[in-house]
Length: 231
Image (cartoon, rainbow, N blue to C red; front, top):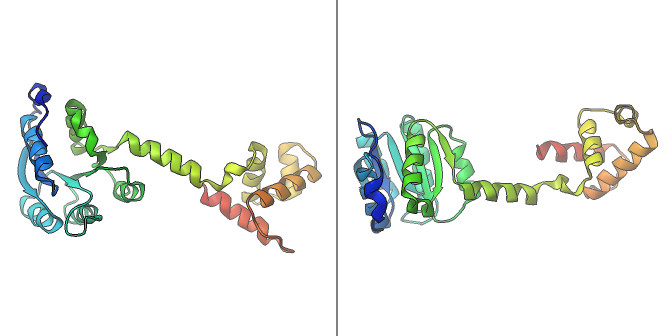
C-alpha cells in the first residue's frame, strides 16, 4: 500500500518514539504502514509476514506496540489472532492492534476480552491517516478501541440473538420478577394486577419462548434461564 499523500501533514509524536513491530503478509500494506508510522514519530523495529516470524520478532525486540493482521500464512485463518494471544501472555506490556479486512465479531470479542491496550480496526480505517495515528497513540497509551463497524455489527448481532425480543415490555417485567423467584401471587402484588392476569402473562411467555408443555415447574425454570442468558 502506498502511503497517502497527506501523511507528511501528520504531526510527529513526542519523544521517545514508541517501538512497533508490524505483521502482515501483504508486503505493500506493510511497507505503507511502516512509512506512515515512521513519518508520524513511531520507530518500526521489525516486520513479519507470518506468525512464527512475528513471535520471534516480538520476543527479541520486546516492542511497546504490535500491529497484526488477523489472517496470515500458512492457513490464512486466525494465525494473527493466535499470535496476539501469545504476545499478550508473554509480553503483557505490549499494546496490540489487530487489523482485519472484514468485521469478524467472534475473533474481535476474543481479543478484546484480553483487557486494556488493545484495538480491533478495519484496514479501511488506515486511509484516514490522522484518525488512524490518533487511534494508535491512544491504544499504546492504554485505551481499548473498537472499530465503529464492529460496534454496529455487535448491536445487530445482539438483536438477532436476543430470545427475549418476542416478549412485550410487560412480559419482560414479569419474567424478570420470575427470575427473582417471585410467585405469581408475588408478581401480581408487585405490578398491581390480578393473579389471573399474571398467569396469562406467564402462559404467553412460555409459549413465545417455545418452551415445551410440562406438568412440572420445569418450563418456568427454563424461561428464567433464557432471561439470565440474555443479560
